[in-house]
Amino acid sequence: MALVEEFLDIFGRSTIGEIFVEMMFCLGPVWIALFVGIVVGWAWKPKWATLRNSKFDFSMPSSPTALVLSPSNSSENEHFASSAQYDSAKSRPLQQNKFENVTITDEDFEHLFQLVEKKDGGPPWKHMMDRSVPHMSYQAWQRDPETGPPQYCSRTVYEDATPELLRDFFWDDDFRLKWDDMIVNAETIEECPTTGTMVVHWVRKFPFFCSDREYIIGRRIWDSGRSYYCVTKGVPCPSIPRKDKPRRVDLYYSSWYIGEVESSRGNSQPTACEVILFHHEDMGIPWEIAKFGVKQGMWGAVRKIERGFRAYQKAKASGLKISHCAFMARVNTKIDREYLKSMEDDEESSENELLASPAKPEGMNIPKLLIIGGAVAVACTLNQGILPKVLLFNAVKRFGNIGRRACPRT
Image 1 (cartoon, rainbow, N blue to C red):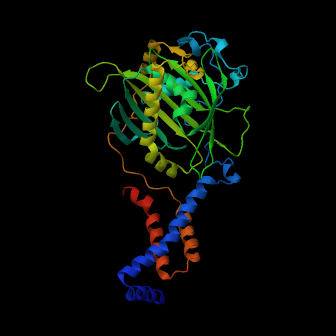
Image 2: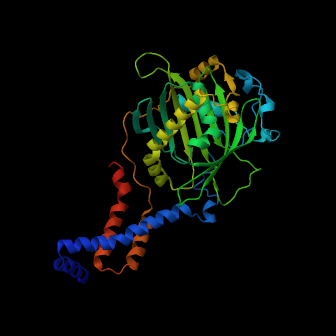
């Protein structure tokens, strides 16, 4: 009763303005504590948190192909033929004798093909975004697999573009350093002069409260008559030792399909190109926070890529010499169209279709014990009267019910 009387006394003796000022004054430290907690959670992770755990095992990607893959055997190459021979005089002094230990096989192509055809057997995609500007349109979807980080799919249509130019643009790390301000360093570690497979080392800049991220990426292109299947994924590389900073991202998958489509201008001419991208990675950031950041920054990133491509287009028209990375994009594996047709016939129909409309957002996966414990800690450190404590525990009650409200009643 004393608690209730004190609470009523505060409201009885205070005007509306005083109550508002007291609320703002008391909630200030709470928001500061919340911001500091998010920053600390992003920037710091104890070493014990990286130990293998049977309940949370993020070591393997959702792709059915393992990170370390053996070279394709002769039976796998029956339907594949290497493109024209690569001029070794143009190559850099790279480590090619060790390349047999880290490669990307035809199984990776088949997995990307299934993703493009929506027959990979994964959960349905949820619509995220549908936007357009002159000379470009963009659509995006997202889904949450049973294990692993959130997965994203997007379809971008570029007007007045060719598949070959887009292929070279995405492979050209030298030019990427000019338009992508998040890439601090990009270098080629290994390459295969026969298949065009490359292993590259990227260092990507993150916000000030996060350490930079390091990527060891294997990549390879399959050519199906001016349609290109480009696979890039994280691979191990013993020649580059792991460091505390920049932090290495092991689970990384970013692959896309490039093909001609009719222009949206209504002239029935294939003067546009579509890029269908599939991407997921474990950056070491809580997935719910990462999903929020991706959604907020997605359109800005897409516009930046489009500006970079148009700059690349102008530079090539002005006589820009082909870079080594762009040259390697032309060393790829040819695919027989009959083989693709046989793959389509063999695949059973899947219910994995893009949803026509956005689904309701899922509840935030925040442990209630963590929220309640944090609220108790903050409440015990504040000595501003009974009002901040009441507000804190009321907020805890609301946050604790977020996940419950997101689920439909049964």
